[in-house]
Length: 318
Ligand SMILES: N[C@@H](CCC(=O)N[C@@H](CS)C(=O)NCC(=O)O)C(=O)O
Image 1 (cartoon, rainbow, N blue to C red):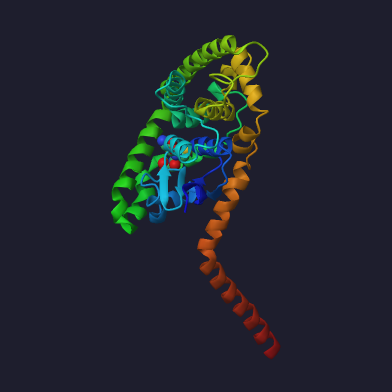
Image 2: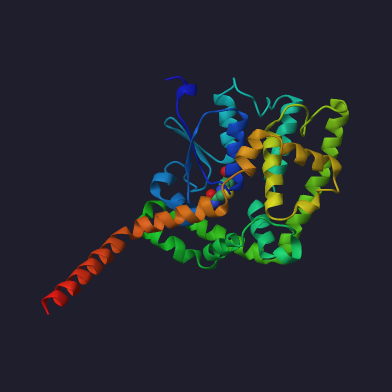
């Protein structure tokens, strides 16, 4: 079977930063693909079937026929190579244009997004304005970070083959918890973001002067590249956590860029018009818990029915 005929499946969650990057990549390339919603809240990403797709137990991951690719960076590069006939997002890195796209990707990828997200929610009153992110994100991080050993312990016992993966997760949550509770570190990361916004504004100015006035342009020219995929998702996250005021209004070109993004169908589809946290997380988590509890619920139902029948039977008899 030819490569482009094999089925593409993206393992993802709506509210995940890196998954939004992959969703936008797929949309920009106009690829038909299946979506498999993953629920890290019920640890689906820790199950062996998923670790066999992505040994880090992170989302997103992509399968293309029998082949699997993990990490949003690698997914983009893989798709660009596997589907060269659709819009190329990363131009050849040997060209000056390709180098520039790669540099911007690296710079944006350098943002410590978990620290920025959880830290902004943790210090919501001090640091943010009009945040959309629900406080439950902090609760999830708190729950995972307080005693990660207890959370991953049962998995280690059940699946010792993947012990190392779980150990890495324990270390990751511990370190994240320390960092997002540290006000200075959170502020430091936001300051780094301000520096990136300054540089983006300069880049947009340069691109504008090369593109001719009045013509629509993106970060590096008329074409929407991988650098724009990364920037679009970053700006969307900045809005979500309530840090939009760090550029909106004060940086005119970046503000106009942000507004232009909201007219782009692919961006709306993969980043903005997504189900709410409630429909995308709480309902599936409830269904999954109910499924787990089904044997108990059925047993209680059977006993209760038997008791009611028994009661009426005795009543009739007496
Ligand atoms: N470098 C990876 C990072 C992926 C990542 O950190 N994903 C997060 C969700 S946004 C995750 O799976 N967290 C759950 C966990 O690590 O257990 C990428 O670009 O895809």
